[in-house]
Picture 1 (cartoon, one colour):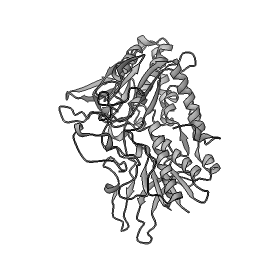
Picture 2 (picture 1 turned 180 degrees about the vertical axis):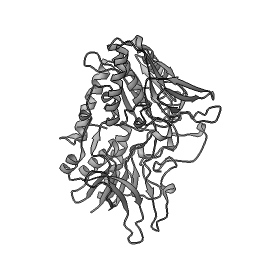
Picture 3 (picture 1 turned 30 degrees about the vertical axis):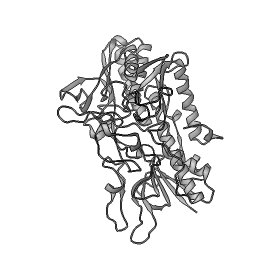
Picture 4 (picture 1 turned 135 degrees about the vertical axis):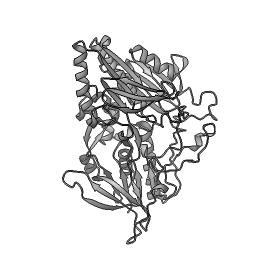
Length: 486
């Protein structure tokens, strides 16, 4: 009998756990450890933050699903990994601390034969002064709880505009090296839609503030897409949508501080600027969750297993080299830790070898450049591939990894809603293949334009809404859930 422990129950971890249970015989043990009692479909937090959905529509309790599937569930956070065991045993184990009300503070050791680190990121609000929603200077849609509070605050802003008071709303990235520009971009479009619907355009200055070198970079170096038979850049694609919605933009900005009245940022020219604002929603930087790792003697080997940003090292080429020497082959494909071959990292938890966008540094030496996005579709695919390879190792005693999912050989689809309503909603739909540019294979564009396309319209909104219900159906492990692709 084999025991597989999955850390995290987000898109990647949950997908991995369900896939393992489906592929392995009942005698094998699947254990999920997550500090959260609920699964949340994060892409729809945008709609919670704009008042178009309630939290209960984007979440569900994990325990009943895992009970139904005979998967053990511990509502707890992993504190440390002991891949060699300790002085009393050679058995690999993790230490956890329970987070549920009933067991809060209690600790336990859980042994494993295989470990999947799918913890996702730590929302590193503290990296930017005044960015945390708890301080009251900025809002967030990163969790459903944050999104609920954000909607409450946004309604107050709408009321002020309705009474004739002009408001400045700033949406974007809250750190010089933040990622997830797509989520913030989607949110600013939804706010613009609601302002237009209420006929409040003359009472609002709506600003897109981003660390991207060009709007539409999205942390993947931008792209060239086919649109209506023509080839255009994602910069033109994104700027045209912003302009259509009356949103002005500020790019190449590294936010350093918010104080409730002003947002302070530097740009690539080395200049310092500030914006007076009434409402903001800025995405924080991400880091690893802070898992410690110890060898058999108890010595801290965290720096061996994890990269400096706290994400787990996998089968990537982490050699420091200039941008011009970056290669598609630098990216991992099986997500196996090079030090301990029974440990894997899936989704955001793995350490990328480098950025996808060309790194940019200001004249004063400050990095202002997006880090690689790994959310949504890539996370689900990686979680599934890791689970399939572990299932093969257990079932067939195979050391070969037949299933691979390099982001340099993987496509992704993104649907960015720009309003909500069956008759009036809109969305920008974009597919990119591959996610990481492969200049050797596609020397002109870096990507295959046959599969890299972009369109905007009402149909995209219907697709976004359909995907919301399909992926929640899949996550709840309803009948034939595995037929729905990642």
